[in-house]
Length: 77
Image (cartoon, rainbow, N blue to C red; front, top):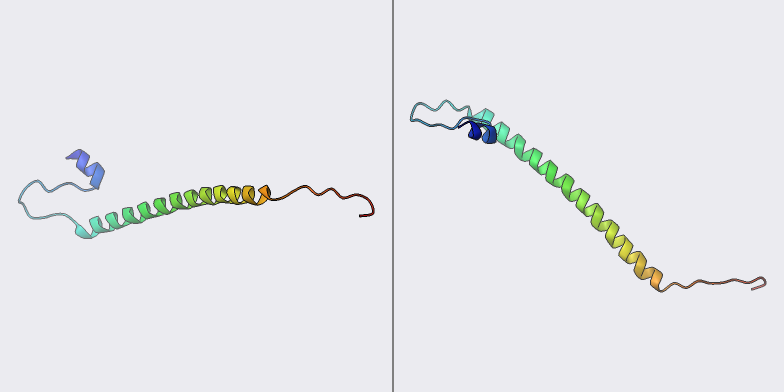
């Protein structure tokens, strides 16, 4: 039961007594946890997207630079 409390942040109902669970508080905690999870996922996604953009930029630059050639200018050209 203690592990349930640590995982869910409320005690499980183990009997048929009257329900003493404060559903509003529990709902708010669960919603706050969902928001926190979403924020963490969005931060991870942002980091991933930045890494992918850097990789794509390097690939594009490499493709463009393949077709370039060095030009040597001389005096009076």
